[in-house]
Length: 483
Image (cartoon, rainbow, N blue to C red):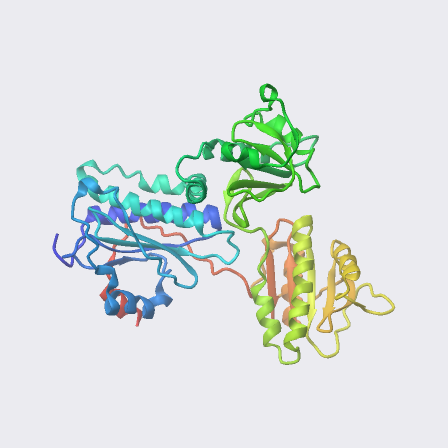
């Protein structure tokens, strides 16, 4: 291969993997882009393939890492040998803000580094890193296979990799804490979690905690009750396990499983390693120790925390000159509590955060005197009031000035009829009244932060690439066009 050329075969390999990553990670984490920087051998050029401009704002740091410092091209002792495509030497994480990266070297690819977005509401980067790790292996395998043996299946593997990524992360955690001789099988555990999560009991979604414990650590568990060894409910009987979850619902007790059956009921214990599943109605979380690995809902695993971050609200409050930093922090905590309560209760609500020195007179219900939301009991009352039609009117003084407030305004450009009256009323009202922020929580969980008629946290809508085959560029040339 000429030092500064790529071939149609390499383009196909790269494109197949990027398509699979983009589609799979978008299902797991929300709309996601992917990119790669690679060098096939020490004599070839360093190429980049970034079909959705994921890396366009990172050109200064990429220039420093790859063209100035050049640590990437250091000899790590790997010889060019396509038969050893599976012997991956891991490359150091680049630690770029807003990105998750994973790279490696092998006998078939001298250097490769894969990139995707680090979404702000992600539980853990672990599964996504395992996803990119598998992309490293698939590219190494495809290049080693030569064009005649190329199967073109890497993209399909990566598109459906969510369950495998979660499993790989849990296996890594288990190996780190317990060594390589773990007895618990993770795939049956994950299959059971999704099966139980979709099983209703008298019309109710599952709630409660199911703790998976390595059999050799079972003696460390403080059991409240233990099933007879010959009569233990089998984990694969989802309906039975769903019924048993009712025994720990609303408590901190756990159903205990060894990955095959339900062993008993126990209190919370600090084990060296365990996998905790929290069922919270329509969704739930998988945790190891203090780390939340992922969430699950609708029969699939996801990276989301299921809680809005509200970064835009926090930044707007801190940047407002009329609000002290202490007051801004207190007001943000109040807003976050109201939003998270609405998310947890699965009801929609609207919050008008009035930053004016004199609060607006918004039509709606009012009490004799506004009440202080800094008081916990009054904040709980506001949580209940938020479930009613209309908006809560909150001032910078942290007082509730009204509830069931009606937001009116003239039609504006940028309205989205698919979002309903609550969202579009907020757009209209916020454009007419500039000195406020409106937070809209929809019943199906999206949270919108609106100011001056614009959704501040609206995602930039980009289209998935329509081209089947991408054409990588030399990184040098790409950086020139980015300058």
